[in-house]
Structure formats: C-alpha cells, structure tokens
Length: 489
Image 1 (tube, rainbow, N blue to C red):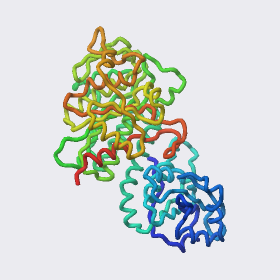
Image 2 (image 1 turned 90 degrees about the horizontal axis):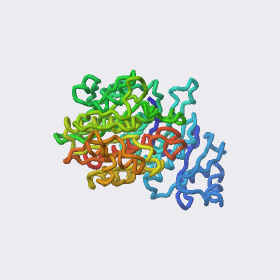
Image 3 (image 1 turned 120 degrees about the horizontal axis):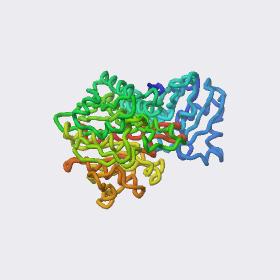
Image 4 (image 1 turned 90 degrees about the vertical axis):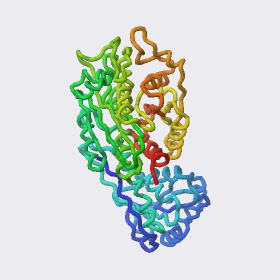
C-alpha cells in the first residue's frame, strides 16, 4: 500500500528555522503579514522576505498560491516558500493550500512554520493527499519524499487532532491504490484477500463464494461474472463500534474489469475499465478509516466483486435472470452490469442486517459524466433527510455532489415485454433509469441513497488534492456522514 508522507508536529522554534533543511514554508495573510516567524526569516534573509511580500507581484498572489526564494541567504534550506493564506481561511482553502505545497516537497523534507495558524492540520492534510503517487507497477521508483514537520504553538494538541486526518489519508490512499491497480493484479481473489487482511484492524470480514451466492439466489450478480475465470465474490465487512442500533449499510460495485460483455465496449479507453470497481474501493477505504479511528458507530460494508468479460458461456442480450429478491430481469445490454451486481448485494444487505440506512456507490453510467462532468457525483434518494445529510457531509469535505431526480415516468422506461423489468431504459435519462432500476431493490422502510461516481472516481488530469488517476472520492464524505450522524458520544 502507498504510505502517506510522514507528518509530525513540533513547537515553534525560531532559532531552528535557520538550520532547517529542504523547504521552509512561511504563511502570509491577506495583507502579506507573516508574524513573528516572518520577522525572524526576514532578518535571516537580510530583508529578502519583505521584498517579496511587499512587491507588486506578491499582491497578485491568490489564496493558496505560493512564491519561492531559491537558496535563501542566511538559511540552510534549499527553498523558502511563502504561502498566501487568510487568517480565517476555510477548511477547503487550507487543504487546497496544502495541496499546492506538495509540489515543493522534495527529498530533504519540509518545515511548515504555522505557529498559531488555526488551520495548520488542514494544510498538512491537504499536503498529504496531494503528495500521493502510485508507482507500485514501475521498476524505477521515485525518490522518497522527505518528512514534513509542522511548527505550531501547541504540538501535543495538534498531534492529537491530527489522528483522524492521518487515518483518513491512509484510507483514501488505500482506495486510490485499489482503483489504480491493473486488472491482472487486482483480481476478484486479490481484492478479497486485501479486504480480509483488514481483520487486523478490528473489522469482521467474511467472503461469500459462488456456491454461497447460488444458495442465496444471487443470480443477477453471478450472471455478470460467469464468463470469467475469476470467481465472483461478495465481501462483507462489519465495524461494530456503537451500541445495539442497526448499522448503516454501504454497498459497492466491484467490477474489477469491464469489457462490456457481449455488448462489447469500444477499444478506445477500455483500459480504464480497471476502475469499474471504484464503488467497492470507496466502501473498503471508508471501512478502513472507521476501523483506524475506532469510530463509535455500527457500519457494514458489502462489495460485489466480479469480472465482466466475454466467452462462450457469457450472458447474452435477451437473457432473463431471477434476482435474489425474486424479480426477473431481461438483460438488454450486458454492459449495464453494475446494477445487476448491486441489486443482489443490496437485497442481501437488507435481508441480513436490517440497516438504518443504505448507500450504494458505483461507477455506474457514462450518462452521469454527460450530466455532471467530472466535478460532481450524482446522488439519488428515496429519503430527503437522509439525502440532505449525505449532501451536507460532501459539502463539508469539499467533495462535489448533486442530487438528481427520480420518478415513475423514468421507471416506465424499464418495462419489459417478457420479464418484470429490463436492465436498461434506453439513452434518455440513462443515469436516472439506472437509479430507478436499483430503487426496485430497496425495501419501503429503508432510507437509501445511490451515488453514481462515474465522473469523479478517476480523473485524466491533476486535481488540487490528487494527481492524475484515482481520486478516492467518497471516503471523506462517508466518514463525515458517519461521524456527524451515527457516532455516539
């Protein structure tokens, strides 16, 4: 697993700034003021810091941006970085500012002179998230980044407060690693093994094999993976940190590779279908975060792991399968496989755990990307309060999310001539009809949200808090939802 950069907190020591190695970072507020740290640095650099902060160019520097002085005189550091950040910076501003600092982190390490800044932890957290790099499959590894030391007025308090962000960073990295892995490495078996290893963190983990699923009647899920030599699996992860209350259930689509099946995808871009297990990756990362920070809540995570490929025994368009619920589904398009996986796992979760609420996550539809691009996940729900709490959590964590509609008129597009429903409803409102399909498998008394993360799970360019590739979108949101709405005490 990719490890986050090391972050530690130390008491502000003005004398130590002169001998700090690597990169030294000084904060400048909206007026360009740098405080006691800046005054010491300015003295060391013979006025160079003030010349920078008082220049016309620095006046144009925006919040979260940096300016650099290379080989600053009077200091042993290779680089002096001035980070523009208001005194009353928001959490999102501070995290993004930390993300900008990641580009300045080299092998010599970094000293962030935060002193009494109220968002020092958020700056460090943003730096950790942005400093991620996936090189597990490269023979030439990048040089290891140096450690980060954050100078603050109260290091003990800062260290205690940073325990949860540190757990979250590790868990986001766990999700990113899963999504970035190639399909010949992250098979269904390897995926399940990585989740089983989380027993060491205190999670209860079990694996349902194909024989178990056959007995349960999970024929929709099994039909997706029956052409693959990789066995289909369902992994159940339980974190019981609360009392006797019903758990929150998190369900993830785990298609480790998606060819589209008989309804074969175009060759261009198919290599990115290693990310079609993104929903399962987010669920796994969230469960890891809850275990690492010993969350006082009951949460169960279930992921359906399959490979959708092509062979003589692959399911065909026109086939009819019977779900665990008992509904029959006419398969119109074998590339609409994620909903077939989710519907059985969702029904199983409700039957077994009687959850207080249920959230499923999936890279489900290309239509979601057309609707919302790569900045927002689409959220669908049968419960306004539950959906509102989820949207609030996403907003708090700076992860874009937007509620989409549901309705009977959309559901009518799924009517089948020969079965209870079809698995697709045509091109119009494709992401909505996919959600309507899943809604069929939600019991009347279960608050439910469906999150389509097709546009946010993997990005083609760098983001403020993640490099090109897997983002880990959703781990922060779901952890926040649990912390705000389900934890005791």
